[in-house]
Length: 298
Image 1 (spheres, rainbow, N blue to C red):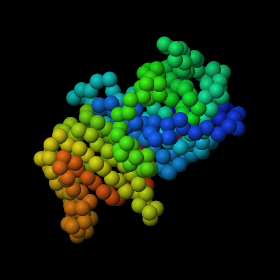
Image 2: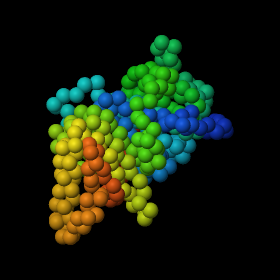
Image 3: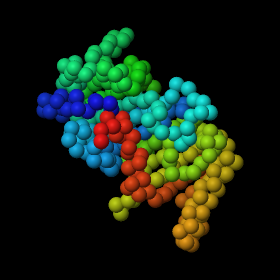
Image 4: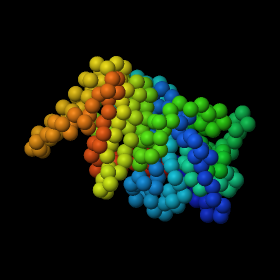
C-alpha cells in the first residue's frame, strides 16, 4: 500500500493487546462497498496463497496479524478508451485490512513517521504520505482504513455512515471463500478466465465470483452472474460451454456433456458456474492485487 507496511510495523510490535475487526458481528465490512461499477475484492488473508513479498519480513508480520483484506476499485468516469480486461493498477481504490491492529498505537506511529503527515478534514483525522499517493488511519481498533484518494469519503461510507449495499447471502459466500469478487452494473472487468466480449460484460446486472478450496489441494472458481434478461443469460451460458468444449477438443479430451450442463447452467436471468478448476498459479494472479494494495513490495 505504497509504503504503508514498513511504517506501521513498529506500531504492531509495541502493543500486546489483541484487537478484532469491529465488523464481525452480523455483517461484513465490505458490505458497505459495491456502488455501481466498483470492483469489490475481499480475501481471507490466511487462506489465500500470496507472493513471497507478502509473506516475509515486515509484510509477513502484517499478514500474520490480519484476517481479511477488502478493497473496492473504481474510476470517476469510464470511456471507450478504457482497457478490457482491466488492470487493477489503473483504478483508484479504498478499503480496509481487518486484524489485530490497535488504533492508538498505529495512529501514533504514523504521526511520528517522517514519511507521513496528519490531515484533518471536517473533523476526520488521517495520514497521507509525502507523494500523496495513499491516505490511511485506524478509525477503530481492528481495521486499517486506506484510500488512494478521499479517505474522508471512504471513512464516512464504510465506517461512520454505513449503508449496506451487498446483501447478506452474497456477503456470506464472499466471506466463506478464499477470494470473493463482486461488481454491480459493470463498466469493465478484470480478467476472470472467461473470454467474454465487453458487450456481454455491459449486459450484466451484477456478478459474483468466489473461489474455494477443492479439498484436494487445488481451487475451484464459482460464479453467479445476473444478466439483464433471460435470453442474455441463456446466450452467456452457451458461450461459456462452447469455450470449455473448444479447450477440451484442443486437449484431445472427450467432453462429459451431462457434467458440463450442470457445471454451467442458466436459471432465469442468472448464469451459474460451479467447480471450474483453478490452479494455484491462476489464483495467485488474482492475489497480485494484494501486493498492489499492500505496497507493491517485491
